Length: 194
Length: 152
Image (tube, rainbow over all chains, first blue to last red; front, side):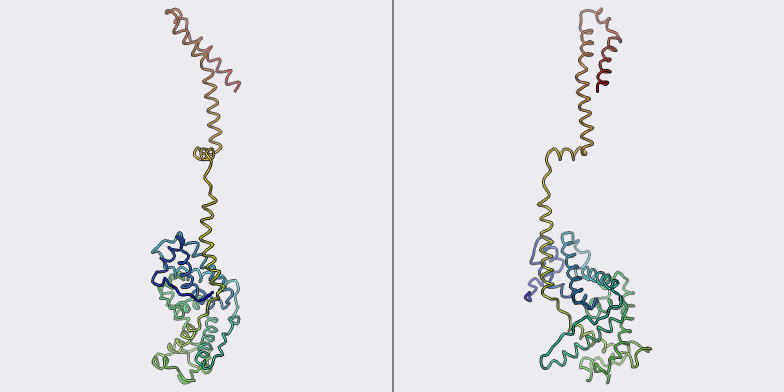
Protein backbone atom coordinates (compact mmCIF):
# COMPACT_ATOMS: atom_id res chain seq x y z
CA UNK A 1 0.00 0.00 0.00
CA UNK A 2 1.29 3.43 -0.82
CA UNK A 3 1.88 5.82 2.02
CA UNK A 4 -1.13 8.06 2.30
CA UNK A 5 -1.90 11.25 4.09
CA UNK A 6 -4.64 11.57 6.65
CA UNK A 7 -6.57 14.19 4.70
CA UNK A 8 -9.12 14.39 7.51
CA UNK A 9 -6.55 15.43 10.09
CA UNK A 10 -8.84 18.13 11.53
CA UNK A 11 -11.57 15.62 12.25
CA UNK A 12 -11.55 13.85 15.61
CA UNK A 13 -11.23 10.09 15.87
CA UNK A 14 -14.72 9.90 17.26
CA UNK A 15 -16.25 11.91 14.42
CA UNK A 16 -14.46 9.67 11.94
CA UNK A 17 -15.77 6.57 13.67
CA UNK A 18 -19.33 7.88 13.59
CA UNK A 19 -18.90 8.73 9.91
CA UNK A 20 -17.62 5.24 9.24
CA UNK A 21 -20.60 3.79 11.10
CA UNK A 22 -22.78 5.73 8.67
CA UNK A 23 -21.01 4.15 5.71
CA UNK A 24 -18.13 6.56 5.04
CA UNK A 25 -15.25 4.44 3.74
CA UNK A 26 -12.85 7.35 3.62
CA UNK A 27 -13.29 7.76 7.37
CA UNK A 28 -12.20 4.14 7.84
CA UNK A 29 -9.10 4.81 5.79
CA UNK A 30 -8.24 7.90 7.82
CA UNK A 31 -8.74 6.06 11.11
CA UNK A 32 -6.58 3.20 9.92
CA UNK A 33 -3.74 5.47 8.86
CA UNK A 34 -3.97 7.37 12.10
CA UNK A 35 -4.32 4.59 14.65
CA UNK A 36 -3.09 1.29 13.26
CA UNK A 37 0.63 2.21 13.20
CA UNK A 38 0.54 3.18 16.89
CA UNK A 39 -1.30 0.03 17.85
CA UNK A 40 1.03 -2.12 15.81
CA UNK A 41 4.17 -0.53 17.30
CA UNK A 42 2.81 -1.00 20.79
CA UNK A 43 1.90 -4.62 20.09
CA UNK A 44 5.36 -5.33 18.66
CA UNK A 45 6.99 -3.87 21.76
CA UNK A 46 4.71 -5.83 24.04
CA UNK A 47 4.85 -9.14 22.22
CA UNK A 48 8.27 -8.95 20.56
CA UNK A 49 6.72 -10.76 17.64
CA UNK A 50 5.76 -8.80 14.52
CA UNK A 51 3.49 -11.53 13.18
CA UNK A 52 1.51 -11.71 16.40
CA UNK A 53 1.45 -7.92 16.57
CA UNK A 54 -0.15 -7.88 13.12
CA UNK A 55 -2.89 -10.24 14.28
CA UNK A 56 -3.51 -8.21 17.43
CA UNK A 57 -3.69 -4.94 15.50
CA UNK A 58 -6.06 -6.38 12.93
CA UNK A 59 -8.28 -7.89 15.62
CA UNK A 60 -8.43 -4.61 17.56
CA UNK A 61 -9.35 -2.63 14.47
CA UNK A 62 -11.95 -5.23 13.48
CA UNK A 63 -13.58 -4.84 16.88
CA UNK A 64 -13.61 -1.09 16.31
CA UNK A 65 -15.34 -1.48 12.94
CA UNK A 66 -17.94 -3.75 14.46
CA UNK A 67 -18.74 -1.48 17.37
CA UNK A 68 -18.87 1.67 15.21
CA UNK A 69 -22.66 1.67 14.64
CA UNK A 70 -23.27 1.41 18.39
CA UNK A 71 -20.45 3.74 19.47
CA UNK A 72 -21.68 5.94 22.30
CA UNK A 73 -20.21 9.36 21.82
CA UNK A 74 -18.50 11.09 24.69
CA UNK A 75 -17.99 7.97 26.81
CA UNK A 76 -14.43 7.08 25.85
CA UNK A 77 -11.71 8.20 23.50
CA UNK A 78 -11.37 5.97 20.50
CA UNK A 79 -7.60 5.65 20.94
CA UNK A 80 -7.99 4.79 24.62
CA UNK A 81 -10.57 2.15 23.77
CA UNK A 82 -8.27 0.67 21.13
CA UNK A 83 -5.21 0.66 23.37
CA UNK A 84 -7.26 -1.15 25.97
CA UNK A 85 -8.25 -3.81 23.46
CA UNK A 86 -4.63 -4.19 22.33
CA UNK A 87 -3.37 -4.40 25.90
CA UNK A 88 -5.90 -7.12 26.71
CA UNK A 89 -5.13 -9.07 23.55
CA UNK A 90 -1.39 -8.82 24.23
CA UNK A 91 -1.90 -9.91 27.82
CA UNK A 92 -3.84 -12.97 26.67
CA UNK A 93 -1.10 -13.92 24.24
CA UNK A 94 1.68 -13.35 26.75
CA UNK A 95 -0.07 -15.56 29.25
CA UNK A 96 -0.31 -18.31 26.66
CA UNK A 97 3.40 -18.27 25.95
CA UNK A 98 5.33 -17.49 29.08
CA UNK A 99 9.09 -17.27 28.89
CA UNK A 100 9.54 -16.22 25.28
CA UNK A 101 12.17 -13.50 24.89
CA UNK A 102 12.66 -10.75 22.39
CA UNK A 103 15.07 -12.60 20.14
CA UNK A 104 12.44 -12.94 17.43
CA UNK A 105 12.62 -9.29 16.51
CA UNK A 106 14.61 -8.68 13.35
CA UNK A 107 17.36 -6.16 13.65
CA UNK A 108 16.65 -3.39 11.16
CA UNK A 109 19.57 -3.00 8.81
CA UNK A 110 20.79 0.41 7.76
CA UNK A 111 23.77 0.44 5.48
CA UNK A 112 23.60 4.05 4.42
CA UNK A 113 26.77 6.02 5.02
CA UNK A 114 26.79 8.39 7.95
CA UNK A 115 24.25 6.36 9.85
CA UNK A 116 26.25 6.29 13.06
CA UNK A 117 23.56 8.05 15.03
CA UNK A 118 20.94 5.77 13.64
CA UNK A 119 22.99 2.74 14.57
CA UNK A 120 23.39 4.06 18.07
CA UNK A 121 19.65 4.62 18.32
CA UNK A 122 19.09 1.09 17.11
CA UNK A 123 21.46 -0.25 19.73
CA UNK A 124 19.77 1.74 22.46
CA UNK A 125 16.32 0.73 21.29
CA UNK A 126 17.43 -2.87 21.24
CA UNK A 127 18.93 -2.60 24.70
CA UNK A 128 15.76 -1.02 26.03
CA UNK A 129 13.68 -3.72 24.37
CA UNK A 130 15.78 -6.40 26.02
CA UNK A 131 15.55 -4.65 29.36
CA UNK A 132 11.79 -4.23 29.05
CA UNK A 133 11.48 -7.94 28.44
CA UNK A 134 12.89 -8.54 31.91
CA UNK A 135 10.19 -6.44 33.58
CA UNK A 136 6.97 -7.92 34.93
CA UNK A 137 4.23 -7.63 32.33
CA UNK A 138 2.25 -4.82 33.99
CA UNK A 139 5.33 -2.70 34.61
CA UNK A 140 6.39 -3.13 31.00
CA UNK A 141 2.95 -2.16 29.80
CA UNK A 142 2.83 0.99 31.93
CA UNK A 143 6.33 2.08 30.93
CA UNK A 144 5.59 1.59 27.23
CA UNK A 145 2.33 3.48 27.37
CA UNK A 146 3.86 6.35 29.32
CA UNK A 147 7.34 6.75 27.89
CA UNK A 148 7.01 5.38 24.36
CA UNK A 149 3.40 6.09 23.47
CA UNK A 150 3.41 9.31 25.47
CA UNK A 151 0.06 8.81 27.17
CA UNK A 152 -0.91 10.49 30.43
CA UNK A 153 -1.26 8.57 33.65
CA UNK A 154 -5.07 8.94 33.85
CA UNK A 155 -5.43 7.51 30.35
CA UNK A 156 -3.07 4.66 31.18
CA UNK A 157 -5.13 3.97 34.29
CA UNK A 158 -8.23 3.74 32.13
CA UNK A 159 -6.53 1.46 29.62
CA UNK A 160 -5.14 -0.86 32.27
CA UNK A 161 -8.25 -0.64 34.44
CA UNK A 162 -6.32 0.40 37.55
CA UNK A 163 -6.02 3.56 39.64
CA UNK A 164 -3.70 6.44 38.76
CA UNK A 165 -1.76 5.71 41.93
CA UNK A 166 -1.23 2.14 40.80
CA UNK A 167 0.05 3.44 37.44
CA UNK A 168 2.50 5.73 39.23
CA UNK A 169 3.71 2.83 41.32
CA UNK A 170 4.16 0.58 38.27
CA UNK A 171 6.07 3.35 36.47
CA UNK A 172 8.37 4.03 39.39
CA UNK A 173 9.20 0.37 39.89
CA UNK A 174 9.55 -0.22 36.16
CA UNK A 175 11.94 2.66 35.65
CA UNK A 176 14.00 1.68 38.67
CA UNK A 177 14.35 -1.80 37.26
CA UNK A 178 15.23 -0.51 33.77
CA UNK A 179 17.84 1.82 35.19
CA UNK A 180 19.47 -1.06 37.02
CA UNK A 181 19.35 -3.41 34.03
CA UNK A 182 20.64 -0.83 31.54
CA UNK A 183 23.50 0.14 33.83
CA UNK A 184 25.12 -3.09 32.64
CA UNK A 185 25.20 -1.63 29.12
CA UNK A 186 26.63 1.71 30.20
CA UNK A 187 30.04 1.22 28.67
CA UNK A 188 28.76 -0.43 25.52
CA UNK A 189 26.30 2.34 24.80
CA UNK A 190 28.54 5.28 25.61
CA UNK A 191 27.73 6.40 29.11
CA UNK A 192 31.08 5.82 30.73
CA UNK A 193 31.62 9.54 31.32
CA UNK A 194 28.28 10.28 32.90
CA UNK B 1 31.38 7.62 22.99
CA UNK B 2 30.35 10.57 25.00
CA UNK B 3 26.99 11.72 26.20
CA UNK B 4 24.79 13.54 23.67
CA UNK B 5 23.92 17.25 23.84
CA UNK B 6 20.46 16.38 25.00
CA UNK B 7 21.91 14.50 27.88
CA UNK B 8 24.29 17.34 28.72
CA UNK B 9 21.36 19.74 28.94
CA UNK B 10 19.89 17.42 31.49
CA UNK B 11 23.15 16.87 33.23
CA UNK B 12 21.68 17.49 36.64
CA UNK B 13 19.03 14.80 36.14
CA UNK B 14 21.55 12.52 34.46
CA UNK B 15 23.59 12.53 37.59
CA UNK B 16 20.67 11.47 39.74
CA UNK B 17 20.36 7.72 39.87
CA UNK B 18 16.93 6.09 39.56
CA UNK B 19 17.73 2.60 40.59
CA UNK B 20 19.74 3.09 43.71
CA UNK B 21 21.76 0.17 44.92
CA UNK B 22 21.25 -3.13 43.20
CA UNK B 23 22.49 -6.63 43.61
CA UNK B 24 22.73 -7.31 39.88
CA UNK B 25 24.46 -4.27 38.33
CA UNK B 26 28.08 -3.67 39.06
CA UNK B 27 27.79 0.03 38.12
CA UNK B 28 25.57 2.86 39.21
CA UNK B 29 22.02 2.75 37.91
CA UNK B 30 21.11 5.10 35.08
CA UNK B 31 19.78 8.58 35.78
CA UNK B 32 16.51 10.01 34.46
CA UNK B 33 18.15 11.72 31.49
CA UNK B 34 20.13 8.64 30.50
CA UNK B 35 17.01 6.54 30.60
CA UNK B 36 15.18 9.15 28.57
CA UNK B 37 17.77 8.72 25.79
CA UNK B 38 16.80 5.08 25.57
CA UNK B 39 13.15 6.04 25.37
CA UNK B 40 13.93 8.58 22.65
CA UNK B 41 15.82 5.96 20.71
CA UNK B 42 12.94 3.53 21.01
CA UNK B 43 10.44 6.16 19.87
CA UNK B 44 12.57 6.92 16.84
CA UNK B 45 12.72 3.22 15.96
CA UNK B 46 8.99 2.59 15.95
CA UNK B 47 8.19 -0.55 13.97
CA UNK B 48 6.26 0.27 10.81
CA UNK B 49 3.16 -1.75 10.06
CA UNK B 50 3.51 -3.74 6.85
CA UNK B 51 1.33 -2.66 3.96
CA UNK B 52 -0.42 -6.05 3.93
CA UNK B 53 -1.67 -5.37 7.45
CA UNK B 54 -3.10 -1.99 6.45
CA UNK B 55 -4.78 -3.65 3.46
CA UNK B 56 -6.29 -6.35 5.68
CA UNK B 57 -7.61 -3.78 8.12
CA UNK B 58 -9.27 -1.80 5.33
CA UNK B 59 -10.75 -4.98 3.90
CA UNK B 60 -12.20 -5.73 7.34
CA UNK B 61 -13.67 -2.23 7.45
CA UNK B 62 -15.31 -2.83 4.09
CA UNK B 63 -16.62 -6.20 5.21
CA UNK B 64 -18.01 -4.85 8.47
CA UNK B 65 -19.92 -2.20 6.52
CA UNK B 66 -21.30 -4.76 4.09
CA UNK B 67 -22.36 -7.29 6.73
CA UNK B 68 -25.25 -5.32 8.30
CA UNK B 69 -26.54 -4.35 4.84
CA UNK B 70 -26.57 -8.00 3.78
CA UNK B 71 -28.38 -8.94 6.98
CA UNK B 72 -31.02 -6.32 6.27
CA UNK B 73 -31.48 -7.57 2.70
CA UNK B 74 -32.07 -11.18 3.76
CA UNK B 75 -34.60 -10.19 6.41
CA UNK B 76 -37.87 -10.71 4.37
CA UNK B 77 -41.26 -9.28 5.12
CA UNK B 78 -43.44 -11.96 6.82
CA UNK B 79 -46.50 -13.39 5.00
CA UNK B 80 -50.01 -12.51 6.23
CA UNK B 81 -50.69 -15.89 7.93
CA UNK B 82 -47.30 -15.75 9.61
CA UNK B 83 -47.95 -12.18 10.71
CA UNK B 84 -51.42 -13.11 12.10
CA UNK B 85 -49.94 -16.12 13.87
CA UNK B 86 -47.20 -13.97 15.37
CA UNK B 87 -49.69 -11.32 16.54
CA UNK B 88 -52.01 -13.86 18.14
CA UNK B 89 -49.26 -15.78 19.83
CA UNK B 90 -48.24 -18.56 17.46
CA UNK B 91 -49.74 -21.91 16.51
CA UNK B 92 -50.96 -22.94 20.01
CA UNK B 93 -53.05 -19.81 20.20
CA UNK B 94 -54.39 -20.38 16.69
CA UNK B 95 -55.39 -23.98 17.55
CA UNK B 96 -57.29 -22.78 20.61
CA UNK B 97 -59.00 -20.12 18.55
CA UNK B 98 -60.06 -22.69 15.94
CA UNK B 99 -61.52 -25.01 18.59
CA UNK B 100 -63.49 -22.12 20.06
CA UNK B 101 -64.80 -21.21 16.59
CA UNK B 102 -65.99 -24.80 15.93
CA UNK B 103 -67.71 -24.96 19.32
CA UNK B 104 -69.41 -21.64 18.62
CA UNK B 105 -70.63 -22.89 15.28
CA UNK B 106 -71.99 -26.09 16.83
CA UNK B 107 -73.83 -24.12 19.46
CA UNK B 108 -75.20 -21.86 16.78
CA UNK B 109 -76.50 -24.81 14.75
CA UNK B 110 -78.02 -26.55 17.74
CA UNK B 111 -79.78 -23.52 19.17
CA UNK B 112 -82.73 -23.10 16.75
CA UNK B 113 -84.52 -26.22 18.02
CA UNK B 114 -84.86 -24.84 21.49
CA UNK B 115 -85.38 -21.30 20.43
CA UNK B 116 -88.02 -22.45 17.99
CA UNK B 117 -89.84 -24.39 20.66
CA UNK B 118 -89.87 -21.50 23.02
CA UNK B 119 -90.87 -19.10 20.32
CA UNK B 120 -93.79 -21.27 19.23
CA UNK B 121 -94.97 -21.61 22.79
CA UNK B 122 -94.76 -17.94 23.49
CA UNK B 123 -96.12 -16.71 20.21
CA UNK B 124 -98.97 -19.24 19.79
CA UNK B 125 -102.52 -18.04 20.48
CA UNK B 126 -103.62 -17.28 23.97
CA UNK B 127 -102.36 -17.96 27.39
CA UNK B 128 -103.16 -21.63 27.24
CA UNK B 129 -100.47 -22.39 24.90
CA UNK B 130 -98.18 -20.13 26.89
CA UNK B 131 -99.20 -21.87 30.05
CA UNK B 132 -98.30 -25.15 28.32
CA UNK B 133 -94.77 -24.05 28.12
CA UNK B 134 -92.97 -25.52 31.05
CA UNK B 135 -89.44 -26.19 32.21
CA UNK B 136 -89.78 -29.65 30.79
CA UNK B 137 -90.20 -28.15 27.35
CA UNK B 138 -87.01 -26.27 27.82
CA UNK B 139 -85.32 -29.34 29.24
CA UNK B 140 -86.27 -31.29 26.16
CA UNK B 141 -84.64 -28.62 24.05
CA UNK B 142 -81.44 -28.72 26.07
CA UNK B 143 -81.27 -32.49 25.59
CA UNK B 144 -80.23 -31.71 22.03
CA UNK B 145 -77.12 -29.94 23.33
CA UNK B 146 -76.15 -33.07 25.24
CA UNK B 147 -76.12 -35.11 22.09
CA UNK B 148 -74.16 -32.40 20.33
CA UNK B 149 -71.48 -32.39 22.96
CA UNK B 150 -71.31 -36.18 22.89
CA UNK B 151 -70.84 -36.11 19.16
CA UNK B 152 -68.18 -33.50 19.61
